[in-house]
Each structure stands twice: as structure tokens, then as C-alpha cells.
Length: 334
Picture 1 (cartoon, rainbow, N blue to C red):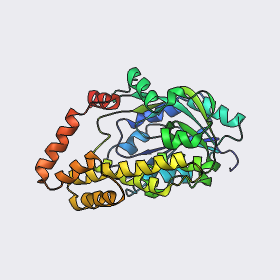
Picture 2 (picture 1 turned 60 degrees about the vertical axis):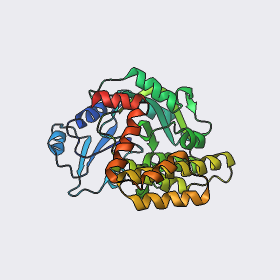
Picture 3 (picture 1 turned 45 degrees about the horizontal axis):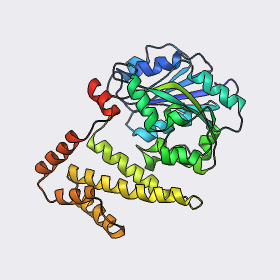
Picture 4 (picture 1 turned 45 degrees about the vertical axis):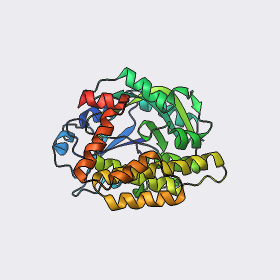
């Protein structure tokens, strides 16, 4: 790295989040560890983002504003490419770091040269920046964070691919380890965090876990839509189709099962959105390679109903489905 470069680069990609971006920025400026640069990458926001960022007179802040919208993954990549630090973290504009995040994660990387990245547990917060204790505990249990102890992660491939226990937003990476796996693939847009961690594990990278809540992840009402759901499912399908685990047959079986399950859900979402032929084609492909689930059969039948009736049925399904902790937090905050 160039002389006098900060040790840590922190990237916050943002788009039209002027109201909540200050919470993320302040969480960085309030760190107990101070040798960092903060890159705020603005994807041509049309709100007051530029005005909000201008409030801070801090030489550690670098504001990168794109004149035209270049989309999520390219915006994140712009911060990664501009970063000067030896260590790197990217987290979303609606999330935040706790004050000792950098202090504790930097200490691990400094003391353990063979560790590629270090990650932690995190809090769940709502739209009012309040920590949700019950949701936090449920989230840690759902993703298996509560069973990880402090230290090196024994089976990184299982944790990233099977359990999906780790999160990029609560992880500090050596920038050299990101360069080794080409950081984030544009084709994985919407699923790039999962993809990055799995590809790192496939490349035999090593990770260290801190069982403390050193980051805050926000659940709020504006996070999901049918269009975003289809985008995410398409990206994750791309990722799963590309992985292979020849030395781990148990993981390869899980991968194949998840490809089938994911594509059935994607077919349902396409049919719900009105992209009927695409949904039917996907169901036909799945039928050729195995038995269809009841869900896929229902989706196939619904594809022959008028769009209005179809959407009412899907809406009904969602209303009777049990709500999990994340939906409860979002609905309360919406």
C-alpha cells in the first residue's frame, strides 16, 4: 500500500437513503479504532444524499458520487477499487457498526497473519435504530451463529454454504484475500455476499469468528418486493449452478437439492408476477429431471388462471403463512 495509507478501508454503498445514512456514517466515525478511511459510494441518488454527506468535515471521508446509476454491484465495486487500506469492509447504508468493531477485528488480523477474514455476530435493529433482543437471539439461532465459539472456523465451506452463518457486513477482510477471489461477481448481483464467502471457502481461505454482536443489521418495511425477490432468486440460481463439490459428496447433494428447490420457488414468483411462460418453462425443466413438489404443481395450475385471481391466491398464501421474527420486526417498523 502507498505510504501513509490508512490501515482499514470502510465502504458504504448508498442509494436514496439520505434519512438513515447518517446513522451508518456516525457508527464509523464513532469507532474506538481510528486508522481508517470511509468511502461513501453514491449511486446517483436523487434525494439529499450529497447534502447530508457534506455535513461532515472529516478528512477520512471520501465521497464517490456516480453521475449515472450504475447499479448495486458496480457501486460496491467502485468503493473496493478506490480503497487504499490493507483491510477492507463493506456494509450497507441501512446498517451500522458498534463502536469496538474495528478495534476487535483489526486486532485479530494483526495477530494472525494466516487469517483471511474475521467476522462477528450482530444485532437486529428496527427502523427506529432500536435493538430487537428477541429477534437478535432468533436470528443467531436460525443461522447457527450461537453455536460458533471464538477462534478459527473449522469447516468454512459448511458454515458459508450449508449454514450461511457468516455475513459480509460484519466481516473485516484482508484486501489481498478479496483480490485473490476477484471480490464480487456482477452476475451474482443481489446474492454477492453469499457468493463471495462461498468462493473464499472453496479457495481454502481461513476465517476467525468473534462471538460478540459487533454490527447492527436493520430490518425495515422497505426491504422486499416481488421484483427484488425474483432478482435475488435468479442471482442465487446462477451461483448454485456454478459451484461443484467433488471432494464433498454430502455438500454436492445439498447443492443439487437447493438448486431444485430454489428454481421451483423462482418459477412460482415468475408466475405470480405475470411472466407466465418463463415460469412454465422452468417448471417443465424441473419436471424433466425429477418429481415436482406440491408447491410447483400448485404454481403450474395457477399459471392458467387470470392474473388478478392468481395474485389474490398468492396473497392469501402469504397471509396464512406463519410470520417469522424478521417479518414481525419489519411489520412493526413499517
